[in-house]
Image 1 (spheres, each protein chain N blue to C red):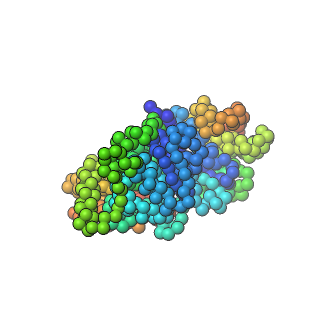
Image 2 (tube, rainbow over the protein chains, first blue to last red):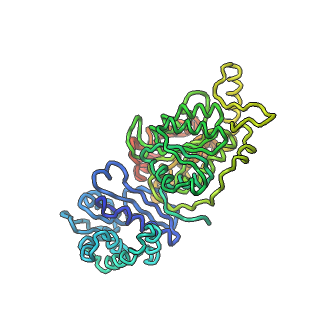
Image 3 (cartoon, rainbow over the protein chains, first blue to last red):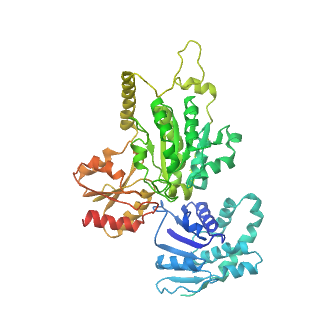
Length: 181
Length: 361
């Protein structure tokens, strides 16, 4: 199994940390992982993206031009990454702020209203965990208990009290992801 | 099994320095390498092992702190990125001349000049041909994973002290900035002062009674003495060439074509090889791990075995390819492909180049 993912959105949405938690979850189940962020001028333009790969085998290139899954959280990222999903692959997006919705017919498209759900749950910071939940429902590549172990590893101990909230957010994401085509 | 962590390459290098029993790290921040000194400062290694971490006033100062520290037989290290490494070349030449061990990591970015902060491999010439003046060589190791960013620190120190020479670790922004799973090796205690005095009879850590004064210098005004000194250095370089060549081969046994690539280009090329395989094209990867000494023998063996051509893939306008050509000596085709200036080539671009330049060309 190899899963090649791009996660893209605005800086501050938790794009990089979502990728990190996913990567740590992979390590918890003995997988090879890589996480490569855009750290150059594009980051300074306000968008953030990270390539995350989980695999049972040694990972080759940590940078890619085609992905099994794209998790897209703003319009700029939609414009840039819709075309990069492999035929038969998956695109998951939050419709909040999206004006041009994805149009491809050769991929599976899912919608997760992460921003709305996080607001309703009373904490916009868990937005990325709602989206992660949506992704894990569509592609259950890591087990929930490994995600929790991954969260423990990637969060400082003083934030461990927030893990149940994060777990709830993931569960809400799993319940609310909608298949479009 | 050692402790498993998800770390950036820069962080793994820093953690490895603490674990390898390094006595002093002297650095100056520069993107895309700054996490090394950030991690070290946050980790407070003085409390863990007694290791000193100091932010010098410049790269010139840090390399000369290595000259001083290494001269006393201590394990000393610095890291920087391309423009900072250029500033260190004078110090490296002096240390090569005075035979002072140290480890210098270069997390390469696009150049020339200040260039940009994106990954590049355009410091190959500087690294392997002697970036400073004089007849000298430095062992150069090129990690291609976060794991190797960790593992190559103790390896570099072994080489540095065995051969009394500065050793370069040449990574790039991609290896430095990405996170991967890394298995950390068990910590090695720092040597005590007594152990250093006993192990390194050349080190300038005080004149023991009844022994000659120890002098570490690169200045030999008598040309005959300097020639003799150079001959000894050359002997050392020949020994390194005979004993310290490192490389990895993937799928080369059955390959018609060979990609030669190091560091992140080797990782990207691995994907290109998979893509080629899906189209029925048999491509192998030869990954130089030691950029100097360069793995000439395996290239020569592949030529004799009758491979149809080599593609040197590097994020530069073509530097390592010259060493490949020197080894192949026109017995078969050698081409170069690479994006540069901080642009990372895609696995698909590499495959296209292979088809256009080697197979079709």
